[in-house]
Length: 263
Image (cartoon, rainbow, N blue to C red):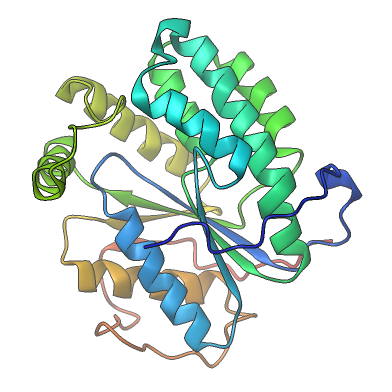
């Protein structure tokens, strides 16, 4: 799946200078091997079938400057800077990504689906020891007020996710897991618990999906949760494709609240 399916703005105007953000911003979070890429592609298809324009992107990366930083981070070249140094790089990449891709796409009325965002920095660099007040400051600077309308957390046990990563790496004949995938199991499990803690603290923004289910069931649960969260915008959209779940289906834990339009 091509992730950068959005127009990159050459205008380096800050987010504060963009007009009203009319689009919707959905982020996907989870540990390694959760299946985010697969599900982003499937949600994109659902939304486009509903007549919406969808922009798919990722972090770290998504814009030319951020993609350069991505290589430094995932290759391990930045690891010698320590967790705080890596957090600074993530923030720099995110600021470029928001200014040059996410904010312009939302201003055009597009639905932005992003594979990871600021929650991943809170979990990954927070688990590594970076203090919460530092992460708060970096997030404030990087996102410039742009927060997700909905965050989909695909939850899988760390052992399950890493097994999927190893299968993928073997099938692609790659050089092996990246800088973060290669951490020990206990680290991945602590990250999983931190993601779930974020979801408990912000139930109106997060929906937790059981990623142990079949890809089709995960797809159905996500589409149901998105239709519930944006019920005012997706009214009349039915369960389509992938055997989508009905109202009584399990696997998704959603607030079920309708979406409040941006001011």
